[in-house]
Amino acid sequence: MAAAMELRCWGGDWGLPSVHTDSLIVLAYAKFCGANVTVSPIDWTWKTITASVPELFCGDSTVQEPAQILNFMRKQRLNADYELTARQGADTMAYIALLEEKLRPALLHTFWVDAENYANLTRPWFASRSPFPLNFLVPCRHANIALSRILLTKGEAPLHRISEMEGKIYSDAKECLNLLSYRLGAAKYFFGNSPTSLDAFVFGFLAPLEKANLPSSPLLSHLRQLENLTGFCDNILAAFFSSDRPYG
Image (cartoon, rainbow, N blue to C red; front, side, top):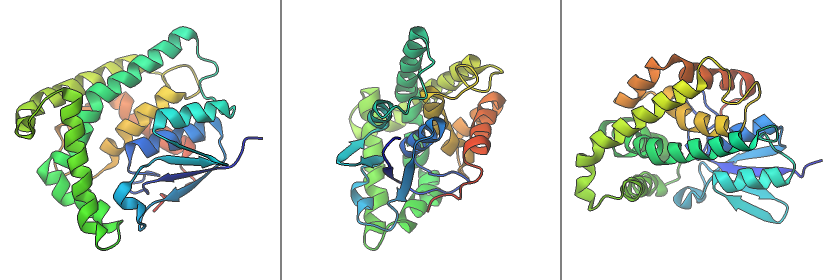
């Protein structure tokens, strides 16, 4: 029997077990492989300032970052990818790299850089989950990290160039969504009848975009045109999280 594990992550809202992409990836994968995981939201603690989440604790081991956590689970014989062929494993890595390169910058921009979304949704949500005086510091810190990560991913500097990059950021993200939609087709999951790590990653990236009440989002408008992707997110929520209350 696999050892009990504790996962620290940002809490849930919008009908999701977590509003945080990387936390959602791990939560979904844990469900897919039947891991015994206790979820501990970091809301209202000092951890909100560092927010090194998701963070998995198992015995004397502490693991961060989705890819590393999933690898750790596989070593515990919790493997949602065990039926994949070598070709499918290579495809999984390629699509995850595509998500990181093409879609993550647009999601970071949507939630943390877009002024309307940040002022009306992102900043109030994270501020309300952080204790005084961190409620003033946490959103600003994460916004700065998001902006830096976009610039690093896109290889652009200085900071004032971000407005010039917006068109390319969203164009790349829409292309990524189109490729995912084409690859999924009419199937329930990306490889066969059971969800794998790729399904966890895609769900983690898409579900917050689909479910958040964003005041401004051209990317969400595009996603809603790809009904197989929105249906994919809804199916995972119904199949694996319907009995769960959102954490937080």
